Length: 365
Image 1 (cartoon, helix red, strand yellow):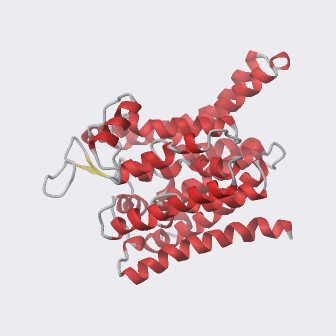
Image 2 (cartoon, one colour):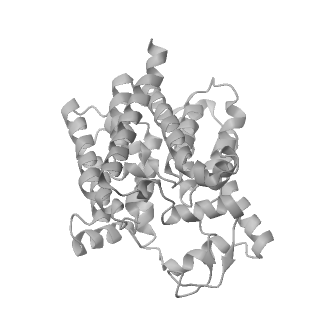
Image 3 (cartoon, one colour):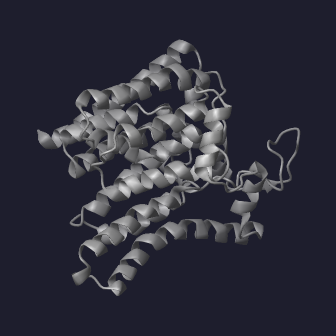
């Protein structure tokens, strides 16, 4: 029965989560949850016809810059769409997010159960479903795909006895780094883990073995962007096309806390980007005694600061969906149950009352 519950419980949480947003969508009369809107359209065109660039047309393209097209979006999710939908991309982009989200919920629940306990797994999975903007897991964005890959990576990372671990870990790492521009930051998890293990057992670990381990864990995360850059060089004669495409968004490196402070002081508290900054940021204060792995907390902190460090917090509510350890921290915290449930309920309320209505009105990009 326990083995069945490891599938039934997270599947039930996912079913309730998906049903909630689908029912609200059907009642509300907006079908944007099921459409290839905004960036989803780029993922769809990549899956259907590959990458393309063209001179920017001010009447059609925004923002206008050196290049326009779909080369700013990473290929792992479009490839998964194309292959798993048997080239029926318009159907797959509506169905596969639900399948990957369900898989992600099950994997997330089980890895948190392994790292902590069943109670933490239940609360953490509920917190995951309650994140502000969690409905993006049900759209054609790659977030459900990333959730499944992230959870699968952690499963093999922490289960040394798992069959095929030696070969599957680097493969999954490459897929993660080919799925999202900032996904390479996931490499900080094995980096901190290896360094932490070295300092806790320096007598039995040499620098050479640590270097070998770091190369094994970290190089696959660098390989993804390198492969994509090589493809762009061979196809478009521009190895740095990823960076050149991003120039039109005018992002400039800045100290992240300054960027966060400016946003919080210059825009209303209920400005959706500020809501996301506050909700995820307050986790460090509300749940200070972290019982999660140090490397997961390190990833959470690094990823939280990364988007502001680029000089902009535009669409940060979507970017922060990759802060999966946030739900892990909530679930495994030693705070009273009512505090954890209340914080998850706050996230759900923000999502339902603030984020989702704006999304259904076509104004949450």
